Length: 199
Image (tube, rainbow, N blue to C red; front, side, top):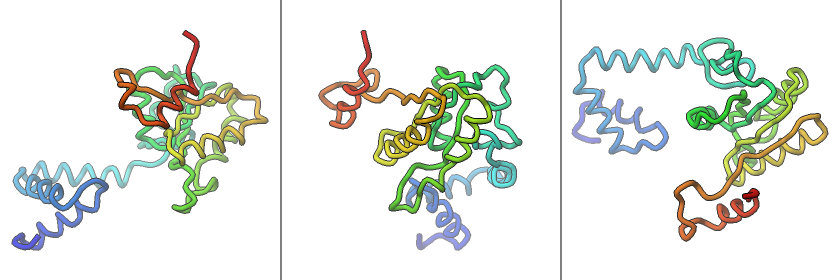
């Protein structure tokens, strides 16, 4: 970073703190910000401050929102008896973009990871149990990632709900549409066989 004026170096340093942004990408972003208009830079700065000041967790599902309830929880057309449990808001957005789900969500904000100090108490599990009892939920779909942490979290949720009057299902895992079997890893192939369905 030598050769850049101190304010540019500071901006590069701050941008490189973002996940997946190395020093070279941070430098390109900093130079782009420098070459944009002052209005563009102000809009960027204002949008960052607005997110920090206004965004909070939905009081029902813990999705990100700027109100007490998120847009999905406010939507009266959603099926309240169907709750999809996801590990983070990004997973929720992916499911929503598919247009295939009309129920509601519950965002855990993480998955079990003892090595990182994330245990059951760090997740929104008690809130899920309270919600199931309070709202008459009939089915919980567990949609955590097919990683060790995601699978451990799914198993824990299934155990917690075992004696509850609610159906517990897991999203299907396996070969993606358009995938090639010869390039499929062992775990994905095993899950595809495990979650096979009638044809």
